Length: 206
Image (tube, rainbow, N blue to C red):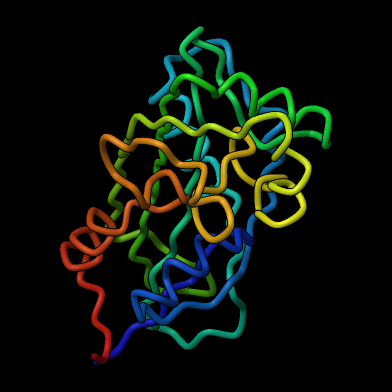
């Protein structure tokens, strides 16, 4: 039996990771306004876990399902933290992206959290039967010198990446060091996700 995975994210990087892993999915997105999350009340890893969970609570549910239908839902969030302890999300604009890139020089941390639900459609609504949450981190050094910044922002996904960091594609030539999960920096820790999909009972054709 094959299952359907609904992705509550419009991230190009997360979609690419799932496609490359041959995990079938459908994008549904979410309605959470991440800018309204309180970034000051909890620690770094707790914050990213909280945002991923909040996205799950605001995921856009598919309609028109039959009673007893089982589906799986995935949300995720990625945040960076500089050596100075500043937490970095997606850049607000180009100037903010440049500031974030400069702040990342010399090393930074990343944490990606995902929330994975197994849900059954009963009496006209989706009921959670099992939930798995994980936070996976990494340390990295990403060095984009001043003379490369404009081209990097033009050719990469940096303007939509947490901390303006996009280590895949054009950006991989600026990645100096990684200690931890490479795919967590991109946006989904794929080893942990694969294990969690197995744990929650997700089946797929190979």
